[in-house]
Length: 254
Length: 249
Ligand SMILES: Nc1ncnc2c1ncn2[C@@H]1O[C@H](COP(=O)(O)OP(=O)(O)O)[C@@H](O)[C@H]1O
Ligand SMILES: [Mg+2]
Image (cartoon, rainbow over all chains, first blue to last red; front, side, top):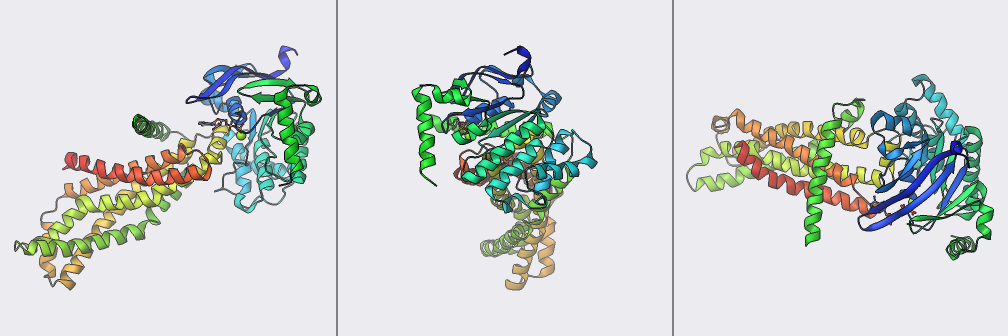
């Protein structure tokens, strides 16, 4: 891997809450234009990890570099400019429930100031169409189903055409059909936006559909970083345990 | 025990941190006039009926109680003065503050708390919007401005309540009652009540927002934040009232 292709470089990332150590020396390189899926058990620190990448949390030790810039050193307008690179889709959508769907999607456009005011409405319509939600702009988030809310969250995340897209468990808690359609959307984004993707997932089906590379977070570290195929050939009990659990959730319908 | 002392100082620390951030962010742009207006309406207008009802019945009860007490000294002609001074200096502000803590402080804890646990606050930050600037600043100033207004109206309606009870129920001479009501009142009495109200507004809104902001742990966490917003704000009002009275006279 050459220097130039590394988009996100994570070195020796440590983070504890009180006495609870969550990240204990994470190292990871994410290549530009690739799709990296982070797997790991519930509560293993995947969301905490992602929040360090986008600078919502500050590391106790170690660093996250994006395009060679250390994230936790950024302040003020530099931080705003940095955030423009990112789109983040949160676990349950995290839509602003006091705003309409259209205002939600327009929010980053207005706040990050990336396009002119007169273009906002068109862009919002375009993004909602991309997630197959034409015509719901005037609804409130509470009126939508869980799957729809996530798709609005995606539309909001891609609205300003970010270079990097972060997804926090985009399919968790959805039925298999919706899961597959969400995964398809993610694959589409990658082609249409040419973005770098970091996806957190629980679900091996999604991993195989969306990942170039898989990284597994276990006890605060990345213990594997491989292609999905390679993952299946590895004989690490920690991985097989994770795969077995996932199979069980497949076998027992909700 | 040492744990709860630690927790206490942590809350105090968070309070001053939040206060500081509000002060820093207040003059910065963009100024969101719509949010300010919305919050003013929610704190001021929507709470008006319950605040006024509280004040009116307080004035009425005060008239009943002070009349029966003062009669024992043959001093019942001072009822109007006593009711008015108590309302203006003390009761309107404290009772209004407690009502607003229950109504608006709890709403702030619940609202911001649920925004925190559903990651809406993180989402704001990711989209280059400081959550203190966007959510807390309008709520704080709306409460600081509106609570004194509510208290001024409470003063009037409380005094009126006392007047009605004295004149209609107890048969006091209306002219004499009105005279003693304003005879001993000075502008500083009115002013001290309003300053208290503004200060209580600051306590209620900062504490409410702070509880929401640091909420964790799903729906249960939001419930905790809501309860604490009311309890802590009420305690803060009662304790600070003593010291404010000492300082303001
Ligand atoms: N702000 C916080 N304060 C304290 N503990 C936290 C905080 N955020 C996360 N944690 C803890 O860190 C651990 C990892 O959380 P998280 O990253 O959300 O797990 P997941 O892998 O399921 O996304 C959990 O035990 C959680 O309780
Ligand atoms: Mg998570």
